[in-house]
Length: 361
Ligand code: UD1
Ligand code: UDP
Image (cartoon, rainbow, N blue to C red; front, side, top):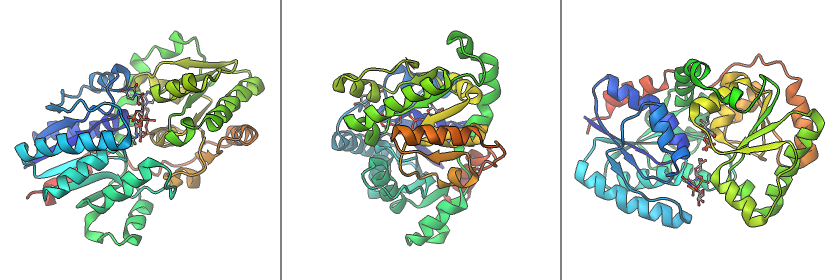
């Protein structure tokens, strides 16, 4: 049988890595199709290098654009490849434009689609990813969920039970497979002159947070207040989207907030594992902090990862500076004794087991 693995952005490369490794280990016939939605070295190739992933067989060079431009170009490019290769199953991961385009192109060609990290819902339709998730789930044949909760969501939406498999999230695989290596190889703490648990770590890149001036201003103000209160540096590997918007809105960076370029997975894991607390609007970072037992303050009003709120690793702070500060203090006083709800680090194995059993044409 042949598997087509479609990916396009930083988190997809990281979260597909254990699937790719499993295909290599079992000598499965597979190929990687990269849309190149992300193309900057530090959002793209650095992860292939670090995670020792093979070069994609196809690269569509789609790059950035409006939602329709990105999705449309991807649909056209992916369809051509799928017609040529005729894989038995097409795998997509997450909720990006790449995922929607991959699933849609495949299902219209009558091919089986497997959606990894299915069943996430923020119930916030202004989030472009929410639309991508719902549409992808509803056109997939195999829905691999991180938790039982996500499975229940899918069943409540009428998706047949036989299509849904609770496998855990492949981010746990990626963290377990790379944490030791990160400790050994990463020099980021020395490079940035940071001491363990003596800094805050931030990532913010969501369209709803950074494309509106007032919202982005509030977030930056919150970060400045955190520095003022705790007198600890706030380290912020800044996504290019956010950098672009800060320049466009002509916003200034508050004292104590250190912007750095996006970093590789090993450096990021090392920074995350040793920080006092994470502030983020990233999906993957909410999961990783939970796995690493690092308290997380999410700069959003909703999350599609409610499990992190339930176990107590995460809190929703929105973006009002006073509330963000209150949430930081609350999370710093918390015992870090929660359990990771996202599985045992064998999601990649489990997903490939299921595909080998049921995935042939
Ligand atoms: C995309 C995903 C988002 C995911 C994020 C991961 C969608 C709708 N969004 O958001 O779900 O959380 O990736 O990081 O699919 N840019 C670069 N270099 C790059 C890529 C982007 O400079 O390699 C800049 C460009 O200015 C571009 C902007 O970032 O216009 C946004 O890129 P895009 O891929 O459209 O969305 P992301 O915000 O990266
Ligand atoms: N990450 C990274 N370098 C960085 C910031 C994040 O390697 O500078 C990793 C992080 O460990 C996580 C993933 O990128 O695995 C999250 O990606 P992102 O926040 O871009 O997307 P989301 O998860 O929100 O879709």
